[in-house]
Image (cartoon, rainbow, N blue to C red):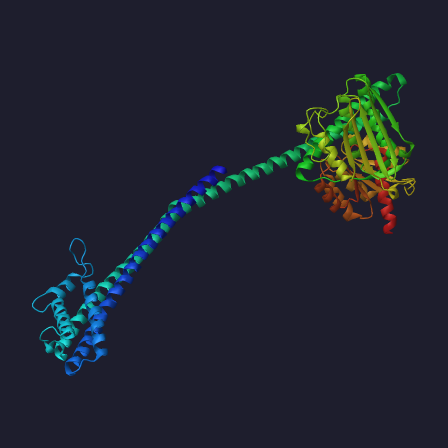
Amino acid sequence: MFKVVENIRTRYRWALISIALLISLSASLMQYFFSAQRFDAKIINIAGKQRMLSQKIAWHSGVILSSPNKLPEHVHSLKASINLFESAHKSLLSKSESGDYIYLTPELINLYESEPNSLDSQIKLFIQEANNLLYQQGDVESKIFSVVHVEKLLKRLDIAVSLFEKQAVKKVNWVSNFELLFWLLAMLLLLVELRFIFMPMEQKILHTLKKYHKQKEFSKQVSKNKEHFIARASHEFRTPLQGLVVSIEELNISKNQQNIKNQAMYCALRLVAMLDELQDLQALSLGHWALKSKNDNLLKSLEKVLIAYEYGYTQKGIKLVTALDSTLNCTVKIDHQRLQQVLTELLGNALKFTEQGEVNVTAKLRNDQLIITVEDTGIGFSNPVRTSGFDSLNQNNHFQGLRTGLARVQYIVKAFNGDIQFESNKPKGALVTLQIPIVTKQLEVSKNALLPSTLHCLVVEDNPLNMLVLTRVLASLGFSYECAENGKVACEMVTKKQYDVIFMDLNMPVMDGFEASKAIHIFDDGIPIVVVTANTSENDIAYANECGAQDHIFKPIDKQAIIDVLTRVFNREVADS
């Protein structure tokens, strides 16, 4: 791109230089010709005055000859006229150092010097006789001042003026021709620049724009393919993880095997966290990201992360000390999954950079603020960490791995309208303080107060494991259910039986959840449809709502998520009624 810009700049400069040179040359020649025209006008004016002065000299001379007494005013005027007439004549006949006439053309030279009656001789004789009369130097040839003689002189002076004017007109014609020539040259130069500079420049620009447009489209396609791949991979990974996490949670094992359960839960949650990180990175790069709040017990959300990390800390020989205040044992509406991601990242970094000692985690609710501190005895920070403008790529300690986790943490905290501070701990280690506002009016005493006591549900899911997990949760809540392996079967079952709620997967063979939701909504728009999917794409969720879905939950699901969505759906129905 820079080469193209440089090439265009060079071509444009040469075009401007060419036009500037032509304009400068044209202006210089015009100035020269205009100067010559002004000088020609001066010469014509001098030649024209010769006629007037000759008449004036003849008149004053005639008055003096006819008057016995010299009239002083006529003598003075005659003297001045003779001097001007003689000076102008000498100017017109000026010669260069080489002896050539400066202002006379061959025609004028012939006029002034041709014998026997040359204009130069006539003028000199006229001047001589006028001086003789003025200074009383011998006999004066009075016929020189007669009307006939003066008329002959005036006639030849008129011819001289005409020849001077002819010479000036010839120069004007030259100027006009040069102006036309320069106009033609300018047009030719513009055509040459258009053909060899601007047209190639335009083609170069168009070619470059097309090239970069193709690259842009290719980049968009790559980004779209990457987004699709990440979404698809996340969906495929979440399906088995759904069953794995729920199965681990429901295992009833002896105390001796509790360590194995914790290890399995730790590994499963780390996989879920990595999937979340991949999707978050994609969402952040595209600007598609939003908190998804739900009602859940705050203490349980934090304990779920801490329990999962107990195995990792035990394996490394680091003591994990937790102090969770009793004020946390309440239900709040917040994005619990994002909150768990933040705590997971902080615990993971503390574990990674602590070789011996302990990690202390405290959490409490004070004045509608959730305050969490993570304090370790690790290597700490070699440089102060600024909470604003943090760049994990420039940190040489305490934050490693993919080097994206802390950036995600700060983004989530900002979305929470919270604050996070990083400090060096004394005598060594790191201290991280997290504060997130919790609005008191969002606290709830009981989430399932309006939850129906009995429900007959239809579970539409093609994956047997996901179907098992969902139906197990419904059974634990005391609800009855039936199952359909795809959307087509679900549509047929809805026409034959009445269901209180439908849990609909989106990606299924034969008929997917979108088409099935649309068909069921057309048949009976009173049946609530809840989308259960691992696809977190906002566009797909919006399209599912257009097809008739009322709400959604993301995999992996748990019992509380089912309670929350059913509470929302049936509370909404009560409000609408």
